Length: 255
Ligand SMILES: Nc1ncnc2c1ncn2[C@@H]1O[C@H](COP(=O)(O)OP(=O)(O)OP(=O)(O)O)[C@@H](O)[C@H]1O
Image (cartoon, rainbow, N blue to C red):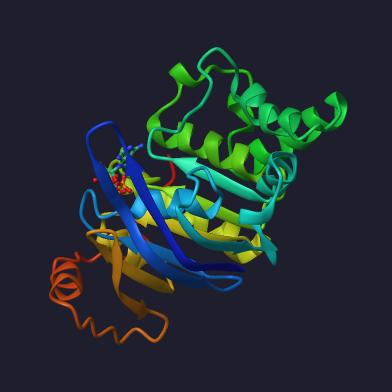
């Protein structure tokens, strides 16, 4: 589903050169909820943003849905991005647009006609349980509700892949769990492959079936979490897993 081969990113400014991501390969299979974890500055967000070419790679190739994104024209890339949704830590909603209009916006960009847009946007708000907030502005919503609108917007174009950049880092633990529950449903019921950047190991333990641990721009370890018996082998991996708390699915609450 996603295949990065020797992808790297170097930022060059007037005075400095910084390698945010060293040549890295990553394979995400259809149906995965793949975590990228590591401390601040490890290169997680940069690697995530390379997947939909929000960042231009310095080297390497990026295949998503069988398409080489590095070989596409700007127009082709815009079209390819319709099947790659994205959500962010700070939600990135348009403050002067209602929730419905925020979701419609994603459809407008994709060239969907107005009547169809309204119907689909309403459906997406319904999926995240926010039909009653359709005509509210984001300022009147809680953080969790804002993230649910952002999820609705990311689903509008029926994406095959959803990229999540610290989606719960601004939220309290209970709201975090409700958002993770939504992401899990989207993965299972809509067959959306998810890549999620986080610095919270609990998020990884709760929702991911695979995780890559990043340090200094490199993936230093990859773990399959599906069989429950996880044995990290790097000291960072061990440290992260030892600090995990005890979240359970029963703790999930809805606002
Ligand atoms: N646009 C940019 N220009 C220059 N340097 C950048 C840019 N974006 C990121 N960096 C640098 O690249 C490195 C990796 O940043 P990145 O945001 O990918 O890390 P991260 O692991 O996601 O960290 P955090 O958890 O704090 O978001 C950092 O040293 C950062 O300062």
